[in-house]
Length: 351
Ligand code: ADP
Ligand code: MN
Ligand code: MN
Ligand code: MN
View 1 (cartoon, helix red, strand yellow):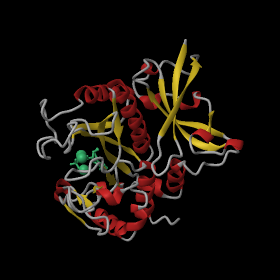
View 2 (cartoon, helix red, strand yellow; view 1 turned 60 degrees about the vertical axis):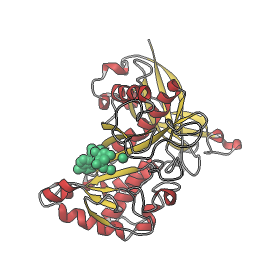
View 3 (tube, helix red, strand yellow; view 1 turned 180 degrees about the horizontal axis):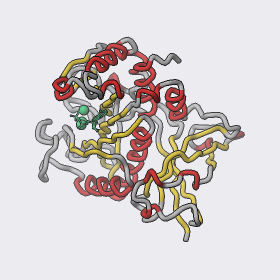
């Protein structure tokens, strides 16, 4: 029997990278069973997927004269749209074997190898996104003018408050069937806007988030809608779309870890520009100081403070241990770059 493996990679589109993919037909043999045979996607043998190539000149990753890029499989989950098939996330290399500049996962691995692995970082990404019509306005916005102001839409139910229910439910089913490390889903503050939370270690968290983005786009094809990660998809008095990043180290999670959380916040405060540089294109449009954001120009942290750059959740303050929430990353940020920056700052890794 032939198995379908959707090879997925992150391209060279600027200012925000996009996803690409192509399908490889793999003869099932001793090494690989249909994906539905693996209860735990971590048991899928990644080494059974051969390296592959693609035309980098069509993905902003190579010139036409030397166009081959190399795709190296690094993580596989189930493909919910092709029963038995796989989604295979790949890192990108130049034809000569060097790490491609667009391969931010490799840089994150380097930070982990240089000491960051020892802090056992965990990441919880709150991926917000906006469902749009194919003509480019948020779902739920009338043809002319605007819907009623923000207030009733967040975590709502009912026809007057929800747009895109069928998409949303199909995406929930798809992401769970895939085996993604999802912890929850909610409707957001603006019509058409929603959130999904992904949780994992420094590599699994970002890997699963990029695969989650693939599934958001893929599901949208069935609903004549598009998914936007624009940080400010509607101008005016509307919340933007972020990717709040919840982060902890083993020192933060142990009894009395609050001190390590404060130390980390102070360290992040010494690298404001470096962090903003990888928090997604257009963060200035979103981090205005209004709409549950802190101005990008001022760094602050505080317990239970949703107007601060970094919030320490109230229960974390009460328990004196746990994690911090950096509220600044945009919905369009690269989670590899965010995780890499966070770990380098907190672990004091230069370069
Ligand atoms: P909010 O109240 O900001 O909307 P959410 O519930 O949407 O919070 O997201 C919180 C995220 O934090 C979840 O993805 C959760 O898995 C994650 N999280 C919980 N504990 C930790 C931890 N110790 N380290 C990192 N992330 C964590
Ligand atoms: Mn949330
Ligand atoms: Mn949210
Ligand atoms: Mn949050």
